[in-house]
Every structure is written in structure tokens, then in C-alpha cells.
Length: 424
Image 1 (tube, rainbow, N blue to C red):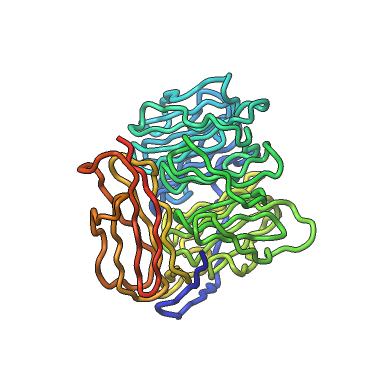
Image 2: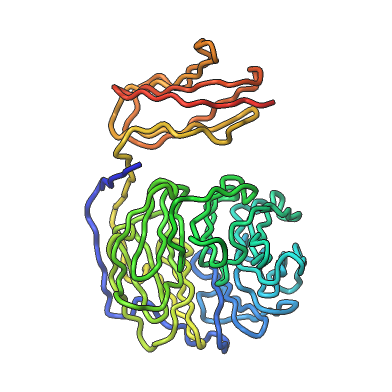
């Protein structure tokens, strides 16, 4: 599917204040290696450093409190609140605290399944996903999922490449169901994989460029960097378009990509000795100057449209309260389809609810109907004028018997039919 971009208001303002846009935090506790940082609101952040400790600030980095993990280091952290954190550790143990790090509970540990925790993300206080490197022989990675924040269930049984091998950089979930994974160890060519059910089933995409780092803004829009090229998808990894990276020739890999919340235009990207900003959703990049450092720019996080943190190696941490000096005034970018398309429903087979997605590139009179095998009209889901865009429609088949059905989209001169299976 092809897309184009439309700007509702085209005013973009670049602000360059006299003071540094990324300011170094001078009071951060001494550390040699930083692994990750997460933040909530204007002033609260939790950073993982070496020596099995996390450091917490509640005043935008002026003062810090250190807390100890039971053992090893936190490779990834997810914050539910200022007291509830989840941690993936580098020995394959996953932890939870409900009192701001004073006490820790093991939520998953199985040395036979994983010896290294790469990723953990809570999307709500109850729903989350975590990942650890898997068996090097079976090439089955560990993915675990929770729906209550307490009990975690192993999901993946497919040989899709056992190891992320570099922490959280080569996988990303947009919610507790939809995720993307670019394994560093696995069958060659190492293709990108996608799941729609929290890692239970994975689909191999045709994209065979493994990721230095990948991030998705939503289920459709994602950016993958494999220097010296940056790739962008607007249709959930079905197709990718490549753009020149901000560096050329042989370079170290990119390390992080971070979308500024609520604005798909603004994206930050780091690599071993550079920091870059895009104000056009990853098509072009501007190199940023960070004072007093030649260290590796490892992890970027934004708590909101203005507040961001940049974690470097060798004890360096930076903070911005103005999006690194960039802001947009009343700018919104809407990603619109260029073609008509009726997507396959998901899940399929289904019981009793499934989602049908369709795209229209211009305002059209839209009809979306369900038929049985004999051609009898079963349901009319849409029969109205629709503006250009991407749409999802729920269909509930609870009143119908199991069987094969068809759904048809008519939009202007466009007409397409697909099959769906109700299995009770």
C-alpha cells in the first residue's frame, strides 16, 4: 500500500535558544555504563546504570536516590507509575517493584529458557510484554505476556531467531498484541517478523534487512535503521521505503530511535558518536551538537512533547525541557493512503469478533457488507460517505453459525471481496 502525507498547517518553528538545548545533568550518581532510562511527567525519571543499581530523580535531575536490584543490571525498565516499575535484567530475570525500588518481586525466571532479558513494556497497569534471548540451538526466543500485571505466560514456540543480542533495540511492540522483531541470530536471510497476538504466532515479512534499531509510532508507521540507510514503513511492515541516513560510509550501528509523543513528525535517533533529529517523520535528518561529550549516545526517552532524557556512556546524562530546541506550532501530519485497499480480517478464523480494515485515498461513498456462501446479504457494516483515511470495523458473528462468509468493500468504482471464517 502506498501513502502520502498531508499537512493541515505548514508552520514549522525552529527555536535555537542561547542556552544549550540538551543540558548535562551534573549531579547524576557516578556510573560507567548506562543501559536505559525511562521517565514520567516533567521531573520523574529512572535510570539503570552499572553495579546492579537504578537511580531515581523526582526533581528533573537535581537530586537522585539509588536503589539496588537483587542482582545484576537492569537492561530495560518500564514505568507504570512513580512507585511501580518493571525490569528486565541481564541474567534473564524479570522483576517488579510496587514501592519505588525498595523491594523487588521476581515475576519470571527460568535459566533453561533465557539467560538475558532484553525488553519489557507495560502498556497499561495490567497488560505487558517482555522478551529474553532464547535457546541458541532451537532459535526460539522467550516472549512472555501478562494481562493482569502479576502472572506472565510464555507465548512464542516458533524458531524465528533466538537472540535479540543487543537489548531492546531490535524489537518493539505498539501494544500488548502487535509487535515487531528483527533477530540478530537466526535463519539467513534474517527477516523482520511480526505478531498480532502478543508473540503467540509470528509472521515472517519479506523485509530482509536486520535492524540496528527499530521503533514504531503506531501499528502502521515505523522506522528501522541499518546504517548507512534508514527505512520507513507506513503500512505495518508490508512495504518499506529507504532514505539516506545522516552518516555515510562504514559507520557504527544506530542505537536508538525515539518518537516525540503525540507527533509523528518529530523523531530523534542516536548512534555511537552522533545524535540526529528529523522533523519530517524520518525522511531527512539534522545532526545535533551536544556540548562536552564524545561519548556514545545510548538511550533516548521522552516523557511528553517537551521533556526528554539522553543517556550516554561513561557517566554522562542530558536533559531537555524544550524537545532539544525544536517545537512545532499547530502542526499536525496525517498519513493518508494513496490506494484503495481492503485488508484481510484479523483474526481469521475468528470467534465471534474480528476486525476488518480498509483504506480509501479520497472521499467516497462506502459500502461494507457481509455475505454467506449462497450470496445472501448477512450484515451491512458501513453504508455512508467517508473521507480519505484508514478505517477499522468490528464484525460480531455471535448470532451466526460456523462457516465461510465473504465481506465486500465498494467505494466509488473500487470493488473487492475477501473470505472470512467463523469457527465456534
